[in-house]
Length: 313
Ligand code: SF4
Ligand code: MG
Image 1: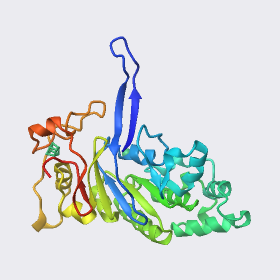
Image 2 (image 1 turned 90 degrees about the vertical axis):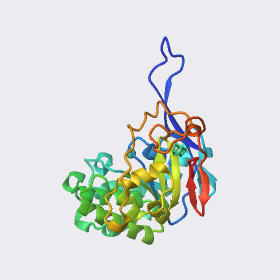
Image 3 (image 1 turned 60 degrees about the vertical axis):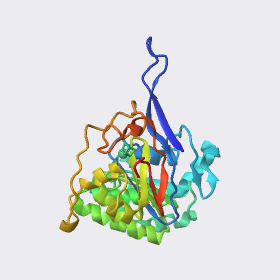
Image 4 (image 1 turned 30 degrees about the vertical axis):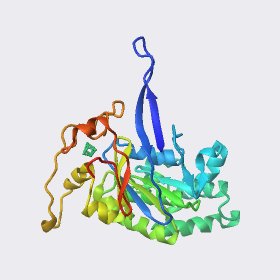
C-alpha cells in the first residue's frame, strides 16, 4: 500500500487545497532474498520515487515497508540511518553523487570507517579488495572522480554501495547513461556481485531489454501503480495487461516467428496531478470498456506468481 504524494503549488484564492502529485499511489509487492526484481515503466510512472521511498530517502505518505519482517516505518530517522547500511542505492549518474574533491580511496575509506565495517587497520586492504572486485585496480585508489570514464565511475558507484555490506541494493537506471557495450559489462558485473555478496536487487529501468537480461521477476508500473507482476518468462512471453502488451510490442524482436504486432497507444501518459477515473490506463487502453471508466481494477492474482490489475484479465 505504499504511497508517495507530493503537494505542489500554493493554496490560492480559488483553490482551497494544494494540488498533489500522486507519484506512487498504492503499490504492494514483495522482493525475495537473492532475487532481482525488475521494475519497468515509462518516465514519470513513479518507479524512481518508489525506490527512494522504500529506502525512506523520500518519506512515504502512506503504507508499510517491511525489511526482513521489521516495520521500517517504525524506525526513527537515526535508526533508519543505521539500517540504510543494509539497503543501498546505485544511481544513474554516479558522478553527481561522488565528491569531486576526494579521491576514490579517501571517499570509500571514510564510509567504511564511519560504519565500522572492518577494523581500522584493515580499511585500506578492504578497499583495495573491493576495487578489484568491481574491476578497478589499486592504482585507482588515489584518483579523483573526474579521472574516470562513465563505466569506471559506475564501478565506483557500485563499490560505494557495496562497501557497507548491504543486503538489498536498489539500482535506479544504473546502466541507462552508459554506452551499450559498457552496459553489458556493468550488468554482468552486477550479476556476479549479486552471487558473490548474497545481494538482492530492485532493478529500476525504462529499458525493457536490460530488465529482461538481469531480472528474475518483473513488475510493470503505470502512473504510480503496479499493473502487472510476474516471473520474467511470463511477462515477456505472455504479458496479460494491455499496457504491458503495448510496451513489449515496441521492442524490436529478433525472433521473426514471434514477431508481435506493434500496439500504438493513443495520447501521452496523463499527468500524475490528474489521474483518470476508474482504471487509470483507460484513456489509452485499446480494449477499455465502460466499467473501466468507473471502476478501478484490483491488483489480483491471476496465475501462479502472476498478478494483474485489469478487469478483462
Ligand atoms: Fe484496459 Fe480496462 Fe484493463 Fe484498464 S481495466 S487495462 S482500461 S481493459
Ligand atoms: Mg527515474
